Amino acid sequence: MKTFYENLDYTTAKVTYSYKTYPSHFHKSIEVLYVTKGELITNINGNVITATKNQLIFIESNDIHGVNKSTEYLTLLIPPCFLNDYFKLTNGKCVANKIYTDEDLYIYDLIIKILENEDSNSLIISGLINLLLGKIIEGCGLTPARKQLEGLREIF
Image (cartoon, rainbow, N blue to C red):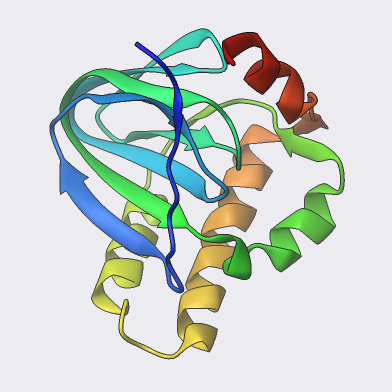
């Protein structure tokens, strides 16, 4: 199966519920897959990653990824227009550990608040996203980013 570019034209963050698999793709948005039941197996840039209930998988902008197996999960898509502070902070780095365990359900609560406020003004959404990304970076750390185009060249 070929990888495809998913052209997401969102002007706000989107939260969706799913239980389906999804083919290998990439996009400019950051994606967070939050497992609400069972297990989720994904492939990010050729690495298989498994998460279970109350864990999330963090997918950087332009990472090649797909969902191979799942039970129930939430998908949070964060478009580039909300990532200026994230890119300033990371500056050539990326989240080191792609799995985050949400023991106190803080991230889950933020995702639900983003869902509930999807139609609110962008300052509220931006604040919630920055809290979420800050907590993930705090828990997962940062590492030097690999060149995104190298992964894309291998596929095309």
